[in-house]
Each structure stands twice: as structure tokens, then as C-alpha cells.
Length: 343
Image (cartoon, rainbow, N blue to C red; front, side, top):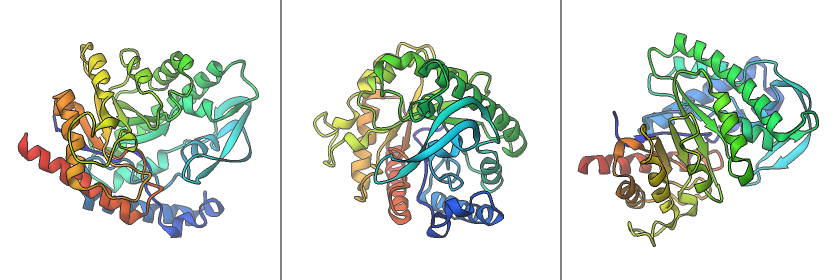
């Protein structure tokens, strides 16, 4: 098994030629051509960076993680824009009728990326709890009912994706990432989180991970590691960390709760991997290789097994320029390579 896999785990900044008229041309032949061009260019960025896993080429087909899925469902109407972060906005939907998947969410994107890269890919899809939390509920009896309906639809999408993957993967492992930024928003609803994610991935034969970022308390998630039927976690740590060098607890404040992750993970018969965010996607500062090495080494000092650790940015790099995003990824890979030479 490869140690310290480097991975892209979300979106990347779109070229201006695609971003400027995205909503006006979406669904047209012009959009398809521009999205394909942007995907090829972004795959080249990831190749130059040296990444092991290229995600789906930076999600060039998607404007935003919630809206992309929601607008492909019947039963949702949109009223207006709300802010997510970094002055980014999306249209928040209201569920007014029974949910149905009108068209697939990601099959065209996955088909194109798989045919244009021979490297490992990981397909992100917005999870059921986040879809529920970011929607108004004007139809279902409860938040749990709505989350489980989103889970049913996501499971439909993943089953179709699994069929497509068998045709275009060239024998590569199917890797699915459930994006759930809202996971720990309401601590008393962790049962809904677990049940809806498990229903989403039911019957899917592949590697399943979850991506969570900017949680106020990851311990809520760690407590449910034994219950979630997934293989790993791709998480944010650098946003809460210092920019100082060193591998002490005082320097690596953002990574300390990995001690609790280890405590729970060690109790399992089959351990889960963790992808650690080693570069902050909300700042233009390009973390030096040495700082990233310290973050990785601190993690290895806790988890000890490098086969259980993967290396990634905190989240998608879409809020940074393409040039800064590439430099952050390059330093991340160089740091990983330096550490592998010493293991």
C-alpha cells in the first residue's frame, strides 16, 4: 500500500473564460467545450504538482457544491442567494415537493475526466446531511426525513456512477468522497448524519471517504467512527494551526485532536485512514515546505502508521488564484517526498 498519498479533495479556481459566463451558458455545447478545456488544463496543473490522486480535475463542471446537485432535482425551488464563505454565494433551495433526481449530477464530468487521465481519481459528491441543512424544508415531516430522502437520491447517483466507472476506469479503484461540511453543525443530530451517510453509500463497492471542513469540534465526528460505514476521513487542520515551525503541541495546535482520532481508531478491527489538511485554502500565504513537513511529522508522531495518513489541502482551492493553488500543491508534494526519503 502506498504511504502518504497526496490528493486533491475539492474544487480548484476556474479559468476566467469558464467562470465569467458560467450560469449563462451552462447546459449548452459551448459550456461543454469550455468545461472540458478547463478540466484538461487543471489536470495538467495537478500533474505538474505531482499529486497522486487528481480528484475530478478541480470540479470544472460544478459552480458550487450544493446548487449543482439541487438544481438537478425535482421538488426544489430557488428563491435567492445566500453567502457561504470568502464572499462566495449560492442559491439556497426550498424543498416544496417529493424529491426526485431529474438528471444525473456528475456522470458527464466523471466520464470525461476518467478518459483523460490514467492516474487515481476520487469523485466528490455533496452529502445528504449538508443538502438537508442547506435547504429550507417546506414538505417533509422532519429534518431526518429530508436527509434520508437526499440519501436515497445520492445512492441512486452513486449506483449509476458505479456502472459508468466499470466502463471507463481501466481497472482503477472506485473512490467516492462524501462532502459534508455541515456534519457537526447540530451535535444532537449526529445520528441523522450517520444514518443518512450510510444509506447514501449502501451497496457501493469502492473506497468511501468523507470530507469535513471547519468543524467547531471534530471529536463529535470521531466519536462516530465505529458507526460510519466508510473507509476514511479527509479533514481540515491547517486553518486552525499556527504558521510557526516545530513539532511540539504548542506549535501544532491545529492537529492536536488527532490524538483523540487515534484513540477511537485504535479500537477498531479495521482502522480508517485520515487525510490531513496541511495547507490553508483561505490565505494566499504559500506555506514553506519545511512547515508542511512539520505538520506531517507531527501527525506521524501521533498515528505512527504512514499508510493510514494521506496529505491534502484543507478543502478545495477555488478561492485562491490558480497560480497560488499550484504552488501550495507543489510544496505539499515536495514535503511529502522529503519525508518518504527518511521513512
